[in-house]
Length: 125
Image (cartoon, rainbow, N blue to C red; front, side, top):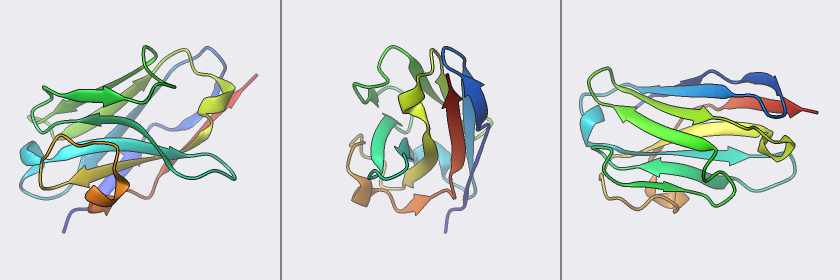
């Protein structure tokens, strides 16, 4: 069993920045593929970014490419999502997720076995 906890959400003006963090319980953090997804009001959950177990492979959704940066620190067992140049359309609940199999396939939700409860990110004009 893996328990995930997100933090760092909040309210920010358009153009601003936020940094989300995700910690995971379990003894094999270094082996996990991890990802960030988000769900805006009235919309389906969508892929944001994913990172392989060692950080060598990273993928971003087109909507956030160039503005968001995903990192994974296996020493302190934290995954982060640095979000810059935030836009109104980035408003959503953000979820971190773990795929314990460790394959670098990031966009398929069903491959992730564990999900955090989510953290709200709100961008105002």
